[in-house]
Length: 151
Image (cartoon, rainbow, N blue to C red; front, side, top):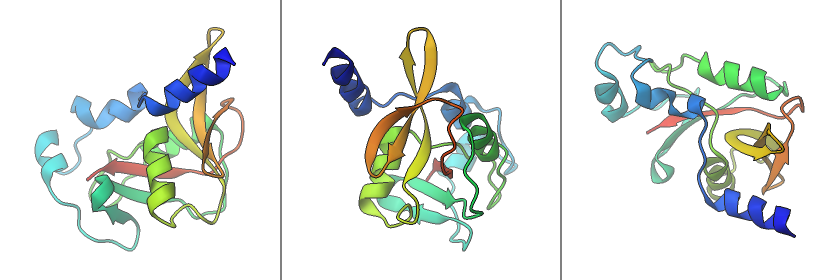
């Protein structure tokens, strides 16, 4: 029971990993201006990604039919350069749950990686979205990937 309470509490708190914070660090800046200018500029509509203004996110669903381990999913998002932006990342579990609840973008598949960590017995796992529910997964499992960036 205590374990379930911790998991439920962690779902409601928005934990982010260091890779989720990369767009705030100023390290990534492809657009030519400062990172603050890049974040404040409004993304242009594209067939490659979806702008969710209400969620303040730009979303890229990878439709290549490939499920990845956590490390590969994180790398795929961090290395993505799309729409003159390269500050893409894995979404937090809260962002994934909102994308799932308010859009149909994730309806084709059921299991998605997030960057939200879960710590147990000195091991780090990550929250995933499985059929609309937050679950904890070992990093070697193969799940689907969606990338996001701030709108």
